[in-house]
Length: 264
Image (cartoon, rainbow, N blue to C red; front, side):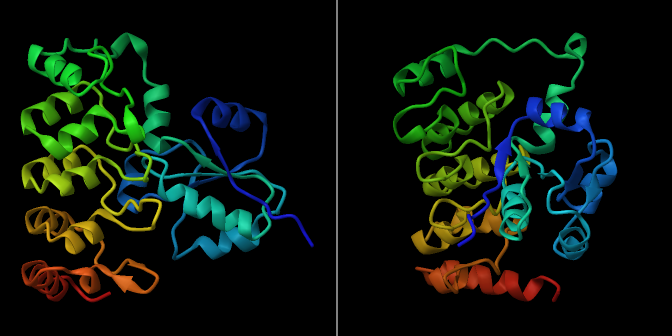
């Protein structure tokens, strides 16, 4: 029985070293507009529409480095390569955002802003270090996750300005956007989306924030997710967000959005 090949998650330093050594297939799995605005030198844009050509055209022993915006969806693509026998299938942690940040000229980097008394008090009250906006507490909760759930929006806004990560995951695989849906504050949901939150990130159970909002009857958060373009078609074990709707209001919001969106 052949040994299963697993993909690897690598950081920017590893990726940079790899690219300096020789031939590597670098795939950018973001949308075409994002790729056009900027990408890693030599990267080729890939998606579900053209992935087959890379899967069948590249040698199985060639390193394949896949990146997305934040390092989430690239893992699914890298796993596909590994499942088909590629021995060096790699996903870039932090994605293109991390690559850009690592190559930013330090001379032009803005100095970190001092935290307000209100934010420092919030961090202390929630048992986080008043010096670390990306600190981790019980169940891997971060200050941004806690503020996304509890509010107020002003604290969320300041955390984002101070560099709090929207792509951090708690012990259940949930990100700050998921916690904002628990709090059901559409202003906070919209704020996180504007900051780059992954609308369709899945937790350890494969559920998205939209699925949670539908199943928990969080209509205000659900509406904000739909307006931002959250995927209505995604499923877990054949069950969609529409199937999960726990209230008529949530169901009607999704049905209306489904009718409004163009047919693919």
